[in-house]
Image 1 (tube, helix red, strand yellow):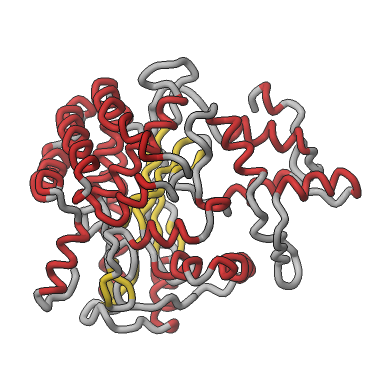
Image 2 (image 1 turned 120 degrees about the vertical axis):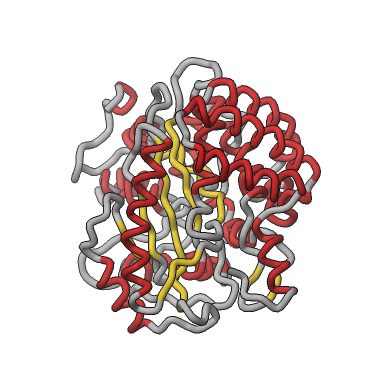
Length: 428
């Protein structure tokens, strides 16, 4: 624990407002030279022979049971709609991260195939309406809370999937690896990554008019829960304010349904608790932080959450490699920062994902001229950097092929999917 958190309560002790601020300030940005890398892959589960068919709860339950206990390195979990998620352990190189995750997927896929099921990499299920499979107090409370914003919450819980890249926050000092600069770049470059890898243009069998409908749905659950703090502010202070002023999703209970308060922020709970002794504990704060879904979530590292799940068995490797190269190679990071810095003018007045920059990225993908130009520079820098990071030929070639097929032509995977649908073909 850093000196800034010295007044924070220990586990099981009631938090003061100052103690909660100190904890968030200290635990969400752990600074140091970029060294570790991780990826979290969410996958939809589809029928192998008929992707449009509804996978029954009985089949999902059997599939989940068959995956539990498999000899995989990455923790394997399940999302509310039955999606499968693999979360890599922190790796010290891109090669190690890719190799471990690829091996784990090679273990998982045959088990599902034996049951007539397949992992599908798409940001949003193009056919199925949201149907919740997991019935747990957490998801019951989440559904009740997010229903206040409309249908977007259930859609995100049950029919969405992503590629989330985890990167170290950076060093304390100003510069290319400084945490302030990396935080700001993650939001500006994040819009470019969103546009380049947009892959959710359909919902319930119809085109939506958006390249990333998944990002649109995130925006619809409200800026208080899914928005980013102002980028002009110091990251620790800005995120601490945003986290404590965010509305409570729920209060957990050991027996019975969890409470879902309305119009109460975590800061409200802290202040009332100091007055009557009913305030939150450290574990309540830890849980509250998991109920916030900004495009970049600080968890001691930076979790990039804006990338749609990608097509093909290995499509996830490209966004992982590009993000790693642009953040962790000094020359590539400098090039990327200069390329995306002008986009800051489009990030006002509202924070991502509710501003014109992110709206344009989600709606148009790389058909947006500014985003296409920035993507071309960033992908070129990434291709130059990957050999310096020790990436193998297969990874570099995959990034090069993506750049030629999509970036150079102002396209994203969503455009390929729409083309296939127009031709009367299955989207994957």
